[in-house]
Image 1 (tube, rainbow, N blue to C red):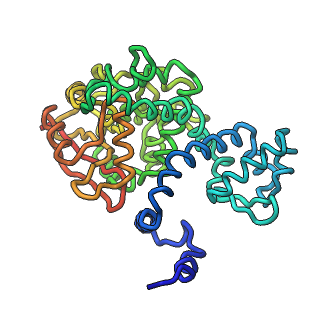
Image 2 (image 1 turned 120 degrees about the vertical axis):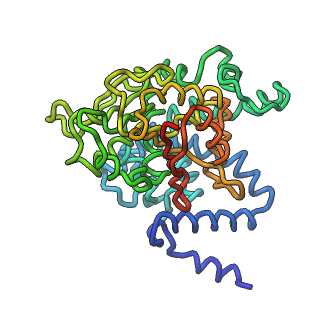
Image 3 (image 1 turned 90 degrees about the horizontal axis):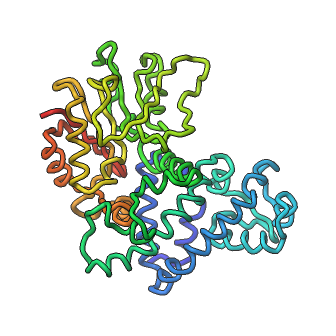
Length: 402
C-alpha cells in the first residue's frame, strides 16, 4: 500500500495539460474526485457543502466586483501582494487580504510567499473572459443560489411529487408570483446578460463543440440554394452558429445561418465578427418556438436545438417539436438535438447536477435515451442516429420527419 508521501508525490506536477485529450482529462478528473470522496470523512463533505461553497462564492464575487482579477491582469499578471491589489483597486487592504486568503485556501490562487499570490488558469480566465466572470454575478446570485435554496421546501410542500408543471414549480414558489423562468430573466437586463454569458461559457468550456460531434460537412454538401443552411432555434448569443461558421466560413452564403430566440434574449446581441460584411452570414430573427417557423426559415437543411428541450416538461417539449415539424422538408431537413443523455448506469455527474437544476427552475429534466425516443416519436419524428462521444456531456440526436 502506498504511503501518503508516495501518493502526494505522484500527484505533483499534474495539471490540465498532462493529458492527450479532453476525454482523457475528464476521465482523470472524475477518478481523482471519486478518490477524494473515499478519503474524505462525512464531516469533510458536510463542511464543503455548508460552509465552503457559500463562503468562497461570496469571496470570489467580492473580488470580481472590486476589480481584483482585472487589475491584476492589467498589472502584468505576475505574483502580487494583497497590499498591491488593494492599492490597484482602492479597496481596504485587510478586506483584500482576508478574501485572498480564503480563495488561496481552495487553491484558486497559489500563495508563493508571505501574502503573495500567483494566478491559476481560473484566476486568469476571470480577467480575460468577461462572460466567465459573469457566471458569478446575476446567474449565480440572482438565479441558481436562491432557486436551490427553496427547492427542498417546495418539494416538501407539494408532497414530494416529481414536478412537471412549468407554471406551478419551484420558481413561482421562490418568487411568489406567476412568472416563468425566461420571463423572469427578461425582466432584468443584468440577469439577461449574465444568463446569456453563462450559457456561452457552458458551451465554450463544458461541452464538446457540436461541429466536433456531428459531420457538419454533410450539411453544406447537401444544401439547397436559396434555403437557410442552419436555423439555431433558441440559440441565445449565437455561439453555436459561430462554431459552424468558423468551420465552414467560405461555404456559408449571406444570411443562411439564422439565429432565433425571444426578443429580450436577443437584445444587444452582436453575432458578426466582420462588421464590414453586409449582410453577414448570420441573420438574427426574434422568434418564439411555440409558434410556427416564419416563411424565411422553412425548409432549412438543419434545425439546431441546443439545450432547449431539457428546459421543458414532456408536454411542452412535445408541443415545441410538433410546431417545428411542419417547417421541415421530408427527406431533406434534419433536426439536431444537442442535449444530455442520462446513462442507465453511472450517469455523468455533470448530467445529474443539470437534471436537478432543470427541476429547480423549470419542472423539467434531463432525459434517458428511451425517454428521448418516446418524446421524439410522439411528435411525428424519427431518430436517424445518436452521435454520442465517449466522456462527452452531451450527444447529438439526429432527427427527421417520420
